[in-house]
Length: 596
Image 1 (cartoon, helix red, strand yellow):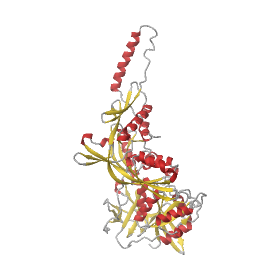
Image 2 (cartoon, helix red, strand yellow; image 1 turned 30 degrees about the vertical axis):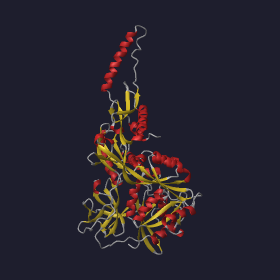
Image 3 (cartoon, rainbow, N blue to C red; image 1 turned 120 degrees about the vertical axis):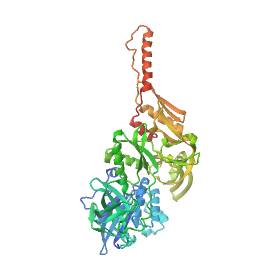
Image 4 (cartoon, helix red, strand yellow; image 1 turned 30 degrees about the horizontal axis):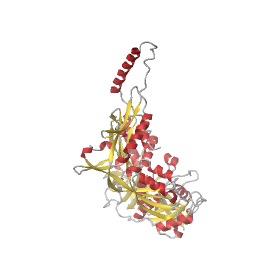
């Protein structure tokens, strides 16, 4: 145990932690020259394409210092605000963290929130100033920021470059000398924390764990504490570049277990593994079910593929513990699932992965957040989608979730950013100048307002120089209304939304205008209406395609033409009664991109 070091890397998105991890793997000889590629740990096609880490990864390295051999377990973490759940679990499995800060950008909002997570878990923090090889690096200024935040000495901050490998030896030296070895009792009953799981089509579910007490041997009978299920440990081992089986894993080790589990519900990330014949007294603390923030319906385009979609979602949930879903049905779209996501990027990634990894074509409905409805009888109902809203006469009031948002930006962008926040019904709470030209703005805002396009607008206003982080603070009463979209008087439930009274008219108007362009013309007029209850607030009409029935009448009496037109009119009327309007898939997608 003395020679084991478990650590993770925390940083804001794009501050170079995956590149720095590459250099650590290269320096310790874990990855051969032949296998080396940029961002070795980002093995998902989507991660490489977008240049972001979506999944946390674990890998073991060997390093020799002063004649002693050390084993180092690196658990890489994502940097985007939507994947903070992944970060919290990685942190729970470590004793130390490398805090990577970009020397050209300084400390960002996400760095601060991940740092607080690490401090809560009493981790030893090693500050690293990355990208020192760039011409526009500002080492002195950024070092001041780190010292202010961490209270460390200037000498403690390691200057490094993930690209060139400068400073990597100093980082490895500090990991071994500053991060404490794992604590724990090798003789105690087995107690191991599951921090991740993946699905293998041939072996079933593979769970990744970190042992806090005791040891596990291949073939042991083990039990998962929270689910109460028992299994045989068919294979255990450590996570190198490939999985390497071992006969025994001891206290402080990070490894994997394969026990032939086939159903995803049996493995909960954050659960505790123990022996059946000698169980531990209690589960490892800190396990919490993830709280989704944004909800949307996901439906198969072909309703026969519902079961395939269910299977795909279950396999995806294994690999992404923060995805939650439950079945629901819609009059317009048939059977599907109501899914909970951590944020909009998370939702986009899930959609992409369903398409790429499982070949599932899906329609996603308008995203919304969960509201609390207080009825006249003072009962509290959680509403995730507009169709679950009780009738207006039973509602006393509706409460919506509020967030505390922290935005760090340059001083020249303060005006437009505050205007954007106020437009989104935000309240300015605080403004702190971190340095001469960087400011931290704290705002209280409704979560429902940032769901659509807030992040994109923030980035474009600040030319990419604003970082954004938030957490849920409380629920507050709000004047919300249900906005329905009607086609020929029929409500399309997949397009209805819960929206604040002040935004309802403009939003309804925009949807009607967009739908008019998208819905194909039929043989009869189609009325597109936006309604709140029985009150229509906006209307557009898709005009009918007319066949020129009078073409064969050249000259002659006007009554002959009139007779043909009357006959056509009757046919149109009958058609409108039986005809139904197909809503093309683009119509559902366009509602998500209304402001583009």
